[in-house]
Length: 202
Image (cartoon, rainbow, N blue to C red; front, side):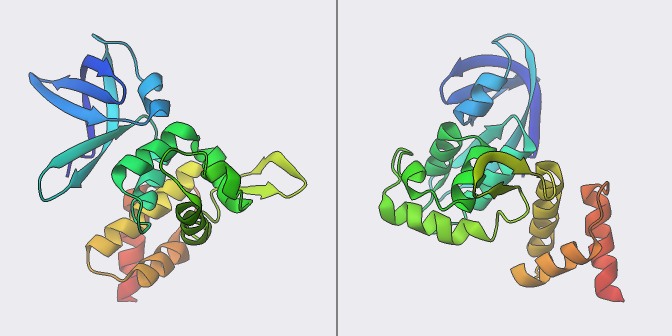
């Protein structure tokens, strides 16, 4: 897998970015939020990536922040949500905005996303509600009030640690339980994974 790319931006045309990494041009598709956050053609950039493998292609998707990549990876697990639609969601709403819509069951806001009809929006609300717990919570009386519980960085570490355990063969529920039992604010991803695996041996 390719976790990130660091090189010179050779070409930009939404949603495509071509990054020159030591003479090799990597084509990366990015949501608009990440696309405009990246620097101009000819400048250096680091892009977090997700490799998407299909029968007929190997695609790279790029992100300016870890929270965007974490949300992308959660979205493509939802039935009926492919990589292209996940990009559309991230291009339409920021991570905070999308979390707000899910927490507040704002079906109307989700159906404004290109390609997302009522049934797809309802599926997003159902399947993402539990996954996004802890990203932030919204007061029903004031949708502009955001309370970190914990922050997006902490949440992305939790998600990444869970994904690592699943890749090692643990079930989703077991991986989530192990990670939550050892996680403490300030721990790195590597420390969380190591602690979780040590917990198994106790």
